Length: 256
Image 1 (cartoon, rainbow, N blue to C red):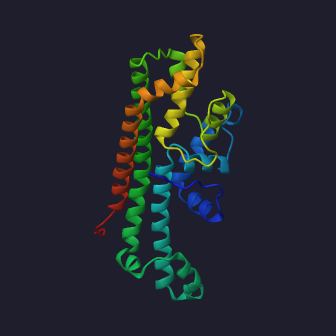
Image 2 (cartoon, rainbow, N blue to C red; image 1 turned 45 degrees about the horizontal axis):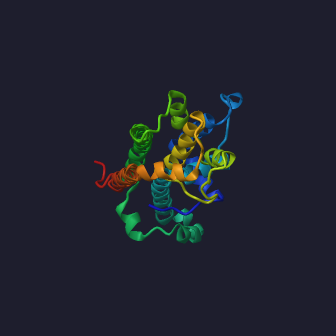
Image 3 (cartoon, rainbow, N blue to C red; image 1 turned 180 degrees about the horizontal axis):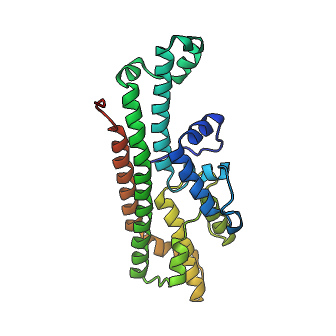
């Protein structure tokens, strides 16, 4: 599971994100949750920081996969309109740029595409809830494993560990604590995110217990967590695969 870092969001990206209310509203809620209390409740528009966090952060696979499906449905619908409407023939060049096959246009009627879109609108909510639940389960799994390995995290440290940070906020905190931050162009998985949150938690525990914050000691504890992180990777890939399969089977049959 590997994605290239998205540094710039073009008009093309913004068009599809803004057009799909299901994704736009979800991203806007995440932006409002990550902003200061002073800005909450005020009308907002999505900024590039929010988009970078979403498409390069812990749920990047979810956001990319669902936006691609929406884009495919929208492009197929538009290509069908151009092909079947004589009045739209002058924009034949745009039709070619859409790069939608004739087979796809022929096999996807307007009724079928509309049904796919309705199902996708429901799926994005359902799938996002699954990712939120997966993150919580992985967090609890790690806390249990930390304690089993004699890392005595207290309630305040658990609360901090479970506080969901943006990708950039976590990187800034690692830098501030003089811990190795991930690359500026790294695309985080849930495993990557929790790995770095765990490093911060171990460091905070050492600090509270007035233990020397030796890198060698931290690496020893992280080594003991190797199987835990491997399991998180396996479960994360399984969730992505299950959701990808669900979207691939949207409205395989025509509506009656």
